[in-house]
Image (tube, rainbow, N blue to C red; front, side, top):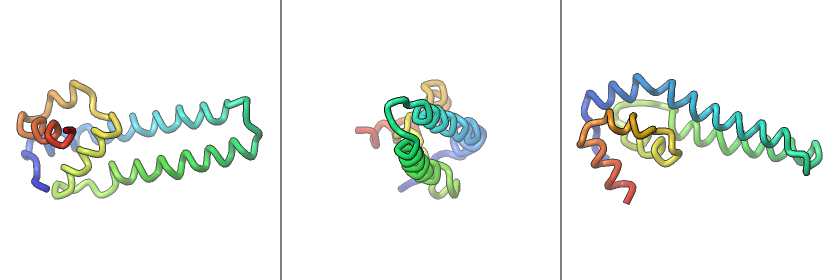
Length: 106
């Protein structure tokens, strides 16, 4: 996998915390729905919540653990897959990086 321009790398580093916060907020909102589910008992709710966090932890790790420039293309693709990049964020990337994302999306 190839790399991205330096300016895109710097931009992604500058929004990393924002992206992580968005993902964690989504995970926590889903957890709240689980906790408020009236149709299941306490034990089932606990199991559902445990599974949710276990699966979510994998997504957080895949998207954010070990942010290195050599791995950023893969991280960027995963972040895009999980719908964390807004249209505005994508617009701030270079044409080269946007084309790379478009090719991988197809």
